[in-house]
Length: 530
Ligand code: XUL
Image 1 (tube, helix red, strand yellow):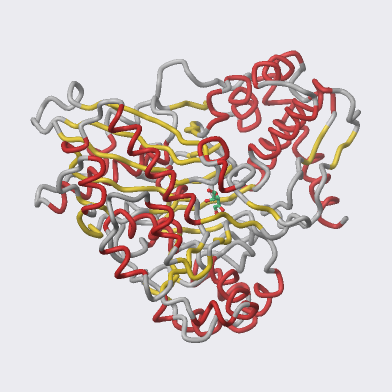
Image 2 (cartoon, rainbow, N blue to C red; image 1 turned 45 degrees about the horizontal axis):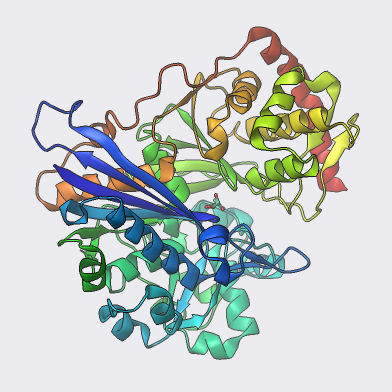
Protein backbone atom coordinates (compact mmCIF):
# COMPACT_ATOMS: atom_id res chain seq x y z
CA UNK A 1 0.00 0.00 0.00
CA UNK A 2 1.27 3.45 -0.87
CA UNK A 3 -0.06 6.67 0.61
CA UNK A 4 -0.09 10.08 -1.11
CA UNK A 5 -0.98 13.43 0.45
CA UNK A 6 -2.49 16.38 -1.38
CA UNK A 7 -2.64 19.70 0.48
CA UNK A 8 -4.85 22.63 -0.43
CA UNK A 9 -3.57 25.90 1.00
CA UNK A 10 -6.61 28.01 0.23
CA UNK A 11 -7.78 31.46 1.27
CA UNK A 12 -9.48 30.48 4.52
CA UNK A 13 -7.98 27.10 5.40
CA UNK A 14 -5.49 24.31 4.79
CA UNK A 15 -6.96 20.94 3.79
CA UNK A 16 -5.17 17.63 3.36
CA UNK A 17 -6.50 14.62 1.49
CA UNK A 18 -4.66 11.35 2.07
CA UNK A 19 -5.21 8.63 -0.52
CA UNK A 20 -4.20 5.00 -0.55
CA UNK A 21 -3.32 3.15 -3.73
CA UNK A 22 -2.67 -0.55 -3.90
CA UNK A 23 0.10 -1.29 -6.35
CA UNK A 24 -1.15 -4.71 -7.48
CA UNK A 25 -2.38 -4.54 -11.09
CA UNK A 26 -5.93 -5.64 -11.77
CA UNK A 27 -7.25 -4.71 -8.31
CA UNK A 28 -7.81 -1.07 -9.08
CA UNK A 29 -11.31 -0.76 -7.65
CA UNK A 30 -10.54 -2.49 -4.37
CA UNK A 31 -7.20 -0.84 -3.79
CA UNK A 32 -8.04 2.84 -4.02
CA UNK A 33 -9.59 4.92 -1.31
CA UNK A 34 -9.44 8.22 0.51
CA UNK A 35 -7.96 7.45 3.94
CA UNK A 36 -8.36 10.88 5.53
CA UNK A 37 -9.42 14.41 4.80
CA UNK A 38 -8.93 17.17 7.35
CA UNK A 39 -9.22 20.96 7.31
CA UNK A 40 -7.48 23.54 9.50
CA UNK A 41 -9.39 26.84 9.42
CA UNK A 42 -6.91 29.71 9.79
CA UNK A 43 -9.11 32.13 11.81
CA UNK A 44 -10.04 29.41 14.30
CA UNK A 45 -6.83 27.38 14.63
CA UNK A 46 -4.37 30.27 14.40
CA UNK A 47 -6.06 33.34 15.96
CA UNK A 48 -2.64 34.86 16.79
CA UNK A 49 -2.36 35.95 13.13
CA UNK A 50 -5.50 38.09 13.46
CA UNK A 51 -7.04 37.22 10.10
CA UNK A 52 -10.70 37.47 9.16
CA UNK A 53 -11.63 34.75 6.65
CA UNK A 54 -7.91 34.08 6.24
CA UNK A 55 -6.91 37.60 5.20
CA UNK A 56 -6.16 41.14 6.32
CA UNK A 57 -8.22 43.71 4.42
CA UNK A 58 -7.60 47.48 4.29
CA UNK A 59 -10.46 49.77 5.29
CA UNK A 60 -11.29 50.56 1.64
CA UNK A 61 -11.41 46.82 0.85
CA UNK A 62 -8.88 47.09 -1.96
CA UNK A 63 -5.62 45.93 -0.38
CA UNK A 64 -5.86 42.31 0.76
CA UNK A 65 -2.94 40.36 2.22
CA UNK A 66 -2.23 37.32 4.39
CA UNK A 67 0.67 36.53 6.74
CA UNK A 68 2.79 33.95 4.91
CA UNK A 69 3.98 32.52 8.24
CA UNK A 70 0.37 31.54 9.00
CA UNK A 71 0.28 29.17 6.04
CA UNK A 72 3.28 27.21 7.34
CA UNK A 73 1.97 27.31 10.92
CA UNK A 74 -1.11 25.54 9.53
CA UNK A 75 1.16 22.88 8.02
CA UNK A 76 2.54 22.09 11.50
CA UNK A 77 -1.00 21.87 12.93
CA UNK A 78 -2.13 19.67 10.04
CA UNK A 79 0.77 17.21 10.16
CA UNK A 80 0.52 16.85 13.94
CA UNK A 81 -3.17 16.03 13.45
CA UNK A 82 -2.50 13.43 10.75
CA UNK A 83 0.25 11.81 12.85
CA UNK A 84 -1.87 11.83 16.03
CA UNK A 85 -4.90 10.32 14.30
CA UNK A 86 -2.85 7.32 13.22
CA UNK A 87 -1.92 8.08 9.61
CA UNK A 88 1.29 6.16 8.89
CA UNK A 89 3.32 9.05 7.50
CA UNK A 90 6.29 6.71 6.93
CA UNK A 91 4.19 5.02 4.21
CA UNK A 92 3.73 8.27 2.25
CA UNK A 93 5.50 7.97 -1.10
CA UNK A 94 4.87 11.50 -2.34
CA UNK A 95 3.13 14.73 -1.35
CA UNK A 96 1.98 17.60 -3.53
CA UNK A 97 -0.27 20.56 -3.15
CA UNK A 98 -2.71 23.09 -4.43
CA UNK A 99 -2.65 26.72 -3.38
CA UNK A 100 -4.73 29.85 -3.82
CA UNK A 101 -3.49 31.37 -7.06
CA UNK A 102 -1.72 34.66 -7.80
CA UNK A 103 -0.51 35.43 -4.23
CA UNK A 104 3.22 36.07 -3.87
CA UNK A 105 5.76 35.43 -1.11
CA UNK A 106 8.97 37.48 -0.85
CA UNK A 107 12.06 35.75 0.58
CA UNK A 108 15.35 37.30 1.69
CA UNK A 109 18.91 36.12 1.05
CA UNK A 110 18.77 34.14 4.31
CA UNK A 111 16.11 31.80 2.91
CA UNK A 112 18.24 29.09 1.25
CA UNK A 113 20.30 28.45 4.39
CA UNK A 114 17.30 28.52 6.76
CA UNK A 115 15.13 26.30 4.56
CA UNK A 116 17.92 23.76 4.17
CA UNK A 117 18.40 23.50 7.93
CA UNK A 118 14.94 23.83 9.53
CA UNK A 119 15.19 22.94 13.22
CA UNK A 120 12.78 20.09 14.07
CA UNK A 121 12.76 21.16 17.72
CA UNK A 122 11.06 24.47 16.88
CA UNK A 123 7.80 25.20 15.05
CA UNK A 124 7.94 26.32 11.42
CA UNK A 125 6.31 29.76 11.66
CA UNK A 126 9.02 31.66 13.60
CA UNK A 127 11.76 30.06 11.51
CA UNK A 128 10.07 31.04 8.24
CA UNK A 129 9.12 34.50 9.55
CA UNK A 130 12.85 35.20 9.77
CA UNK A 131 13.33 34.83 6.00
CA UNK A 132 10.35 36.83 4.77
CA UNK A 133 11.49 40.06 3.13
CA UNK A 134 7.83 41.08 3.30
CA UNK A 135 5.75 39.41 6.06
CA UNK A 136 2.40 40.11 4.40
CA UNK A 137 1.76 38.39 1.08
CA UNK A 138 -0.66 40.06 -1.35
CA UNK A 139 -3.44 37.58 -2.24
CA UNK A 140 -5.95 37.13 -5.05
CA UNK A 141 -8.63 39.28 -3.39
CA UNK A 142 -6.40 42.34 -3.72
CA UNK A 143 -7.66 44.84 -6.28
CA UNK A 144 -5.40 47.80 -5.51
CA UNK A 145 -3.27 47.66 -8.67
CA UNK A 146 -5.41 49.11 -11.50
CA UNK A 147 -2.69 51.67 -12.33
CA UNK A 148 -0.01 48.98 -12.55
CA UNK A 149 -2.29 46.94 -14.84
CA UNK A 150 -2.63 49.88 -17.22
CA UNK A 151 1.14 50.46 -17.25
CA UNK A 152 1.92 46.80 -17.90
CA UNK A 153 -0.64 46.60 -20.68
CA UNK A 154 0.87 49.59 -22.46
CA UNK A 155 4.44 48.32 -22.01
CA UNK A 156 3.75 44.94 -23.65
CA UNK A 157 1.77 46.31 -26.58
CA UNK A 158 -1.85 46.24 -25.45
CA UNK A 159 -4.44 44.02 -23.76
CA UNK A 160 -4.83 41.70 -26.73
CA UNK A 161 -1.10 41.03 -26.99
CA UNK A 162 -0.94 40.29 -23.26
CA UNK A 163 -3.97 37.98 -23.36
CA UNK A 164 -2.72 36.13 -26.43
CA UNK A 165 0.72 35.54 -24.96
CA UNK A 166 -0.06 34.90 -21.29
CA UNK A 167 -3.70 33.69 -21.47
CA UNK A 168 -5.13 36.71 -19.61
CA UNK A 169 -5.27 40.47 -19.96
CA UNK A 170 -3.77 42.36 -17.01
CA UNK A 171 -5.62 41.68 -13.77
CA UNK A 172 -5.19 43.44 -10.44
CA UNK A 173 -4.69 40.18 -8.53
CA UNK A 174 -2.21 38.68 -10.99
CA UNK A 175 1.36 38.52 -9.71
CA UNK A 176 2.95 40.89 -12.25
CA UNK A 177 0.85 43.87 -11.14
CA UNK A 178 1.44 42.98 -7.48
CA UNK A 179 5.22 42.78 -7.92
CA UNK A 180 5.24 46.05 -9.85
CA UNK A 181 3.39 47.82 -7.03
CA UNK A 182 5.73 46.41 -4.37
CA UNK A 183 8.93 47.30 -6.28
CA UNK A 184 7.69 50.88 -6.80
CA UNK A 185 6.23 51.55 -3.36
CA UNK A 186 8.77 49.69 -1.21
CA UNK A 187 12.04 49.68 -3.16
CA UNK A 188 14.11 48.88 -0.07
CA UNK A 189 12.31 45.66 0.73
CA UNK A 190 12.14 44.80 -2.95
CA UNK A 191 15.94 45.15 -3.04
CA UNK A 192 16.17 42.83 -0.01
CA UNK A 193 14.06 40.21 -1.84
CA UNK A 194 16.09 37.52 -3.56
CA UNK A 195 13.25 35.13 -4.45
CA UNK A 196 9.57 35.73 -5.24
CA UNK A 197 7.49 32.60 -4.92
CA UNK A 198 3.84 31.93 -5.58
CA UNK A 199 1.97 30.47 -2.59
CA UNK A 200 2.26 27.06 -4.29
CA UNK A 201 6.04 27.12 -4.85
CA UNK A 202 6.60 28.68 -1.40
CA UNK A 203 4.81 25.82 0.35
CA UNK A 204 6.65 23.24 -1.77
CA UNK A 205 9.97 24.96 -0.96
CA UNK A 206 9.29 24.66 2.78
CA UNK A 207 8.36 20.99 2.42
CA UNK A 208 11.51 20.09 0.49
CA UNK A 209 13.77 22.49 2.37
CA UNK A 210 14.91 24.08 -0.87
CA UNK A 211 13.85 26.25 -3.77
CA UNK A 212 10.90 24.60 -5.52
CA UNK A 213 9.93 25.48 -9.09
CA UNK A 214 6.58 26.91 -10.20
CA UNK A 215 4.42 24.71 -12.42
CA UNK A 216 2.95 26.10 -15.67
CA UNK A 217 -0.61 25.86 -14.25
CA UNK A 218 0.09 28.36 -11.47
CA UNK A 219 2.60 30.40 -13.50
CA UNK A 220 -0.35 31.11 -15.84
CA UNK A 221 -1.77 33.31 -13.09
CA UNK A 222 1.15 35.75 -13.14
CA UNK A 223 0.75 37.55 -16.53
CA UNK A 224 4.46 36.75 -16.87
CA UNK A 225 4.52 33.35 -18.61
CA UNK A 226 4.47 32.65 -22.33
CA UNK A 227 1.57 30.20 -22.19
CA UNK A 228 2.50 28.11 -25.22
CA UNK A 229 6.24 27.91 -24.58
CA UNK A 230 5.71 27.53 -20.83
CA UNK A 231 8.63 29.88 -20.14
CA UNK A 232 8.88 33.29 -18.51
CA UNK A 233 8.17 36.02 -21.09
CA UNK A 234 11.14 38.44 -21.04
CA UNK A 235 9.15 41.46 -22.26
CA UNK A 236 6.59 41.14 -19.47
CA UNK A 237 9.31 40.56 -16.89
CA UNK A 238 11.20 43.68 -17.98
CA UNK A 239 7.98 45.70 -17.95
CA UNK A 240 7.13 44.59 -14.40
CA UNK A 241 10.07 45.46 -12.14
CA UNK A 242 13.83 46.02 -12.26
CA UNK A 243 16.00 42.94 -12.16
CA UNK A 244 13.02 40.62 -11.76
CA UNK A 245 14.21 37.63 -13.81
CA UNK A 246 16.74 36.46 -11.23
CA UNK A 247 14.15 36.70 -8.48
CA UNK A 248 11.74 34.25 -10.14
CA UNK A 249 11.94 30.47 -9.62
CA UNK A 250 12.26 28.13 -12.60
CA UNK A 251 9.12 26.89 -14.37
CA UNK A 252 9.04 23.08 -14.44
CA UNK A 253 6.45 20.51 -15.52
CA UNK A 254 3.60 19.99 -13.05
CA UNK A 255 4.70 16.37 -12.65
CA UNK A 256 8.32 17.27 -11.79
CA UNK A 257 9.77 16.26 -8.43
CA UNK A 258 10.96 19.32 -6.48
CA UNK A 259 12.92 17.27 -3.94
CA UNK A 260 12.64 14.91 -1.00
CA UNK A 261 10.71 15.89 2.11
CA UNK A 262 13.01 17.85 4.45
CA UNK A 263 14.55 16.31 7.59
CA UNK A 264 12.35 18.69 9.64
CA UNK A 265 9.23 16.72 8.58
CA UNK A 266 10.90 13.33 8.90
CA UNK A 267 12.06 13.97 12.44
CA UNK A 268 9.05 15.88 13.72
CA UNK A 269 6.26 13.86 12.11
CA UNK A 270 7.76 10.51 11.06
CA UNK A 271 7.84 10.82 7.26
CA UNK A 272 10.21 8.55 5.32
CA UNK A 273 11.86 9.58 2.04
CA UNK A 274 8.66 11.01 0.49
CA UNK A 275 8.98 12.91 -2.80
CA UNK A 276 7.74 16.50 -2.89
CA UNK A 277 6.01 16.94 -6.23
CA UNK A 278 5.81 20.50 -7.60
CA UNK A 279 2.64 22.22 -6.35
CA UNK A 280 0.08 23.92 -8.58
CA UNK A 281 -2.77 26.40 -8.25
CA UNK A 282 -6.09 25.43 -6.68
CA UNK A 283 -8.05 25.71 -9.91
CA UNK A 284 -5.62 23.59 -11.96
CA UNK A 285 -5.66 21.02 -9.14
CA UNK A 286 -9.48 21.07 -8.94
CA UNK A 287 -9.54 20.34 -12.69
CA UNK A 288 -7.64 17.09 -11.98
CA UNK A 289 -9.59 16.30 -8.81
CA UNK A 290 -12.87 16.58 -10.71
CA UNK A 291 -11.53 14.19 -13.34
CA UNK A 292 -11.49 16.80 -16.12
CA UNK A 293 -8.34 15.54 -17.83
CA UNK A 294 -9.98 15.57 -21.27
CA UNK A 295 -12.14 18.10 -23.11
CA UNK A 296 -15.92 17.98 -22.88
CA UNK A 297 -17.13 18.58 -19.31
CA UNK A 298 -17.53 21.72 -17.26
CA UNK A 299 -16.31 22.04 -13.65
CA UNK A 300 -17.66 24.48 -11.08
CA UNK A 301 -15.93 25.19 -7.78
CA UNK A 302 -18.05 26.90 -5.14
CA UNK A 303 -15.42 28.12 -2.69
CA UNK A 304 -14.32 31.50 -1.37
CA UNK A 305 -14.25 32.37 -5.07
CA UNK A 306 -16.63 30.67 -7.48
CA UNK A 307 -14.88 29.40 -10.61
CA UNK A 308 -16.13 27.77 -13.82
CA UNK A 309 -13.61 25.85 -15.90
CA UNK A 310 -12.95 23.13 -18.43
CA UNK A 311 -10.01 21.36 -20.04
CA UNK A 312 -9.28 22.57 -23.56
CA UNK A 313 -6.69 21.82 -26.22
CA UNK A 314 -6.64 25.41 -27.50
CA UNK A 315 -4.89 28.32 -25.78
CA UNK A 316 -7.22 30.93 -27.38
CA UNK A 317 -8.14 33.71 -24.89
CA UNK A 318 -11.69 34.72 -24.01
CA UNK A 319 -12.90 37.06 -26.80
CA UNK A 320 -14.93 38.94 -24.16
CA UNK A 321 -11.73 39.66 -22.22
CA UNK A 322 -12.91 38.49 -18.80
CA UNK A 323 -11.78 34.86 -18.73
CA UNK A 324 -8.39 33.21 -18.41
CA UNK A 325 -6.51 30.42 -20.11
CA UNK A 326 -4.15 28.50 -17.80
CA UNK A 327 -1.89 25.55 -18.50
CA UNK A 328 -3.44 22.30 -17.26
CA UNK A 329 -1.31 20.10 -14.97
CA UNK A 330 -2.36 17.17 -17.17
CA UNK A 331 -0.94 18.87 -20.28
CA UNK A 332 -2.97 21.06 -22.63
CA UNK A 333 -4.87 24.02 -21.21
CA UNK A 334 -7.81 24.98 -19.04
CA UNK A 335 -10.26 27.81 -19.67
CA UNK A 336 -11.49 29.54 -16.50
CA UNK A 337 -13.70 32.36 -15.30
CA UNK A 338 -13.40 33.51 -11.67
CA UNK A 339 -15.91 35.39 -9.50
CA UNK A 340 -14.75 37.03 -6.27
CA UNK A 341 -18.31 37.03 -4.90
CA UNK A 342 -18.58 33.30 -4.23
CA UNK A 343 -18.98 32.13 -0.64
CA UNK A 344 -18.11 35.68 0.44
CA UNK A 345 -21.48 36.80 -0.99
CA UNK A 346 -23.44 33.74 0.21
CA UNK A 347 -22.06 34.25 3.74
CA UNK A 348 -22.98 37.96 3.71
CA UNK A 349 -26.60 37.13 2.86
CA UNK A 350 -26.71 34.28 5.39
CA UNK A 351 -25.37 36.57 8.14
CA UNK A 352 -27.54 39.57 7.18
CA UNK A 353 -30.68 37.54 8.02
CA UNK A 354 -29.18 35.73 11.03
CA UNK A 355 -29.33 32.31 9.32
CA UNK A 356 -27.22 29.17 9.51
CA UNK A 357 -26.68 27.04 6.37
CA UNK A 358 -29.70 24.84 7.17
CA UNK A 359 -31.90 27.94 7.43
CA UNK A 360 -30.38 29.33 4.23
CA UNK A 361 -31.29 26.10 2.37
CA UNK A 362 -34.80 26.06 3.83
CA UNK A 363 -35.47 29.59 2.57
CA UNK A 364 -33.95 28.74 -0.81
CA UNK A 365 -36.26 25.76 -1.15
CA UNK A 366 -39.30 27.77 0.00
CA UNK A 367 -39.04 30.17 -2.96
CA UNK A 368 -39.87 29.38 -6.60
CA UNK A 369 -37.34 29.19 -9.48
CA UNK A 370 -37.14 32.65 -11.04
CA UNK A 371 -37.93 34.25 -7.65
CA UNK A 372 -41.07 35.91 -9.04
CA UNK A 373 -38.80 38.19 -11.09
CA UNK A 374 -36.75 39.46 -8.11
CA UNK A 375 -33.07 39.75 -9.07
CA UNK A 376 -29.73 40.47 -7.40
CA UNK A 377 -26.30 41.14 -8.84
CA UNK A 378 -24.33 39.86 -5.83
CA UNK A 379 -21.44 42.33 -5.64
CA UNK A 380 -20.65 42.40 -1.93
CA UNK A 381 -16.88 42.75 -2.51
CA UNK A 382 -15.22 44.27 -5.62
CA UNK A 383 -15.89 41.82 -8.45
CA UNK A 384 -13.40 40.24 -10.87
CA UNK A 385 -15.88 39.13 -13.56
CA UNK A 386 -16.78 41.67 -14.75
CA UNK A 387 -14.13 43.84 -13.11
CA UNK A 388 -16.05 46.37 -11.01
CA UNK A 389 -15.02 48.48 -8.11
CA UNK A 390 -18.44 49.11 -6.68
CA UNK A 391 -19.32 47.36 -3.49
CA UNK A 392 -22.87 46.54 -2.55
CA UNK A 393 -25.34 44.31 -4.36
CA UNK A 394 -27.69 45.60 -7.05
CA UNK A 395 -31.32 44.62 -6.43
CA UNK A 396 -34.18 44.71 -8.94
CA UNK A 397 -37.78 44.16 -7.78
CA UNK A 398 -36.31 42.78 -4.56
CA UNK A 399 -37.19 44.05 -1.08
CA UNK A 400 -33.94 44.05 1.01
CA UNK A 401 -36.06 43.02 4.04
CA UNK A 402 -37.34 39.84 2.38
CA UNK A 403 -34.90 37.19 3.65
CA UNK A 404 -36.21 34.28 1.56
CA UNK A 405 -36.15 36.16 -1.74
CA UNK A 406 -32.69 37.58 -1.03
CA UNK A 407 -31.36 34.08 -0.36
CA UNK A 408 -32.74 32.85 -3.68
CA UNK A 409 -31.61 35.98 -5.48
CA UNK A 410 -27.95 35.64 -4.43
CA UNK A 411 -27.80 32.00 -5.55
CA UNK A 412 -29.67 32.63 -8.81
CA UNK A 413 -27.57 35.74 -9.54
CA UNK A 414 -24.35 33.77 -9.08
CA UNK A 415 -25.59 30.91 -11.27
CA UNK A 416 -26.76 33.26 -14.04
CA UNK A 417 -23.44 35.17 -13.94
CA UNK A 418 -21.62 31.85 -14.30
CA UNK A 419 -23.81 30.80 -17.20
CA UNK A 420 -23.35 34.12 -19.04
CA UNK A 421 -19.60 34.26 -18.47
CA UNK A 422 -18.91 30.64 -19.38
CA UNK A 423 -20.38 30.86 -22.89
CA UNK A 424 -16.87 31.27 -24.26
CA UNK A 425 -15.79 28.05 -22.50
CA UNK A 426 -18.82 25.98 -23.46
CA UNK A 427 -21.95 27.50 -25.05
CA UNK A 428 -23.97 24.53 -23.79
CA UNK A 429 -23.16 21.52 -21.61
CA UNK A 430 -24.91 18.34 -20.57
CA UNK A 431 -22.96 17.59 -17.36
CA UNK A 432 -21.29 19.79 -14.77
CA UNK A 433 -19.00 18.48 -12.03
CA UNK A 434 -19.25 20.54 -8.84
CA UNK A 435 -16.94 20.88 -5.85
CA UNK A 436 -16.26 23.31 -2.99
CA UNK A 437 -18.06 23.83 0.33
CA UNK A 438 -21.36 24.97 -1.19
CA UNK A 439 -21.49 21.93 -3.51
CA UNK A 440 -22.68 19.95 -0.47
CA UNK A 441 -25.90 21.98 -0.65
CA UNK A 442 -28.46 20.20 -2.87
CA UNK A 443 -30.68 23.30 -3.14
CA UNK A 444 -27.77 25.31 -4.60
CA UNK A 445 -26.92 22.49 -7.02
CA UNK A 446 -30.57 22.44 -8.15
CA UNK A 447 -30.39 26.14 -9.08
CA UNK A 448 -27.19 25.48 -11.06
CA UNK A 449 -28.77 22.51 -12.85
CA UNK A 450 -31.83 24.56 -13.80
CA UNK A 451 -29.91 27.68 -14.87
CA UNK A 452 -27.44 25.68 -17.00
CA UNK A 453 -30.12 23.17 -18.08
CA UNK A 454 -27.54 20.46 -17.35
CA UNK A 455 -27.07 17.66 -14.86
CA UNK A 456 -24.84 18.59 -11.91
CA UNK A 457 -22.86 15.72 -10.33
CA UNK A 458 -20.54 15.50 -7.33
CA UNK A 459 -17.54 13.29 -6.72
CA UNK A 460 -17.06 11.57 -3.35
CA UNK A 461 -14.14 13.46 -1.76
CA UNK A 462 -15.46 16.91 -0.87
CA UNK A 463 -12.34 18.88 -1.78
CA UNK A 464 -11.42 18.39 -5.43
CA UNK A 465 -8.36 20.67 -5.17
CA UNK A 466 -6.61 18.67 -2.43
CA UNK A 467 -7.72 15.41 -4.06
CA UNK A 468 -6.29 16.67 -7.36
CA UNK A 469 -3.01 17.43 -5.60
CA UNK A 470 -2.90 13.91 -4.12
CA UNK A 471 -3.61 12.41 -7.55
CA UNK A 472 -0.84 14.56 -9.04
CA UNK A 473 1.54 13.21 -6.36
CA UNK A 474 0.53 9.64 -7.31
CA UNK A 475 0.88 10.25 -11.05
CA UNK A 476 4.28 11.96 -10.67
CA UNK A 477 5.60 9.28 -8.31
CA UNK A 478 4.83 6.58 -10.88
CA UNK A 479 6.46 8.59 -13.61
CA UNK A 480 9.58 9.31 -11.54
CA UNK A 481 9.89 5.61 -10.71
CA UNK A 482 9.81 4.66 -14.40
CA UNK A 483 6.28 3.17 -14.30
CA UNK A 484 4.16 6.03 -15.75
CA UNK A 485 0.39 5.74 -15.90
CA UNK A 486 -2.08 7.58 -18.13
CA UNK A 487 -4.06 10.39 -16.50
CA UNK A 488 -7.34 8.55 -17.11
CA UNK A 489 -5.92 5.66 -15.04
CA UNK A 490 -4.53 7.89 -12.32
CA UNK A 491 -7.90 9.53 -11.62
CA UNK A 492 -10.03 6.36 -11.95
CA UNK A 493 -12.32 5.45 -9.02
CA UNK A 494 -11.35 8.57 -7.01
CA UNK A 495 -13.17 10.94 -9.35
CA UNK A 496 -16.23 8.78 -10.11
CA UNK A 497 -19.48 10.69 -9.47
CA UNK A 498 -21.54 9.73 -6.40
CA UNK A 499 -24.85 8.27 -7.63
CA UNK A 500 -27.87 10.53 -6.95
CA UNK A 501 -25.90 13.17 -5.04
CA UNK A 502 -26.33 15.98 -7.55
CA UNK A 503 -29.27 17.58 -9.32
CA UNK A 504 -31.08 17.11 -12.65
CA UNK A 505 -32.50 20.07 -14.56
CA UNK A 506 -36.27 20.52 -14.45
CA UNK A 507 -37.76 21.58 -17.78
CA UNK A 508 -40.16 24.23 -16.40
CA UNK A 509 -37.47 25.86 -14.26
CA UNK A 510 -34.89 25.76 -17.08
CA UNK A 511 -37.41 27.54 -19.33
CA UNK A 512 -37.94 30.26 -16.71
CA UNK A 513 -34.22 30.91 -16.43
CA UNK A 514 -33.73 30.96 -20.21
CA UNK A 515 -36.32 33.75 -20.31
CA UNK A 516 -34.75 35.58 -17.34
CA UNK A 517 -31.13 35.50 -18.59
CA UNK A 518 -31.37 38.50 -20.99
CA UNK A 519 -32.92 40.62 -18.20
CA UNK A 520 -30.16 39.58 -15.83
CA UNK A 521 -27.51 40.35 -18.48
CA UNK A 522 -29.04 43.81 -18.83
CA UNK A 523 -28.89 44.38 -15.06
CA UNK A 524 -25.22 43.29 -15.04
CA UNK A 525 -24.50 45.75 -17.86
CA UNK A 526 -26.19 48.60 -16.02
CA UNK A 527 -24.06 47.73 -12.96
CA UNK A 528 -20.87 47.99 -15.02
CA UNK A 529 -21.87 51.42 -16.38
CA UNK A 530 -23.04 52.64 -12.96
C1 XUL B 1 -8.46 32.29 -9.81
C2 XUL B 1 -8.56 32.99 -8.50
C3 XUL B 1 -9.14 32.27 -7.34
C4 XUL B 1 -8.08 31.83 -6.37
C5 XUL B 1 -8.78 31.39 -5.10
O1 XUL B 1 -8.00 33.09 -10.83
O2 XUL B 1 -8.17 34.12 -8.35
O3 XUL B 1 -9.93 31.19 -7.73
O4 XUL B 1 -7.25 30.85 -6.92
O5 XUL B 1 -8.19 30.44 -4.39
